[in-house]
Image (cartoon, rainbow, N blue to C red):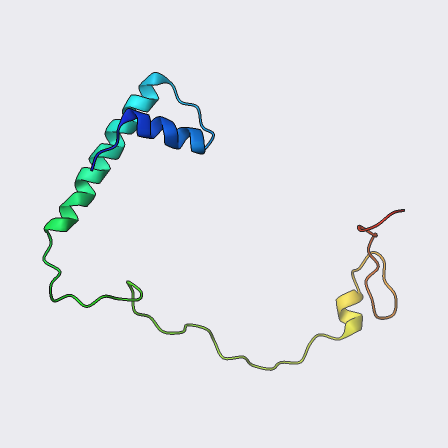
Length: 97
């Protein structure tokens, strides 16, 4: 399979990209080189190769949840520019004035 200049122009149009004449020629050549390289994969013998769901087998790397006490409310609020006894005061960002 090869890519024609018309194919590259069509893909560029779909992506809303504009290329010069030289760029279109260059992309056409590059895409054809990539396809030639990928086509070499068809030469591999995959008869006895089992399909994988993921290329790398791994295990869960999440750490265990450890319950720790939270910092006190007064400590969390001590550097707040505006606060109430329990809450941060922040400017309203949704709605009208």
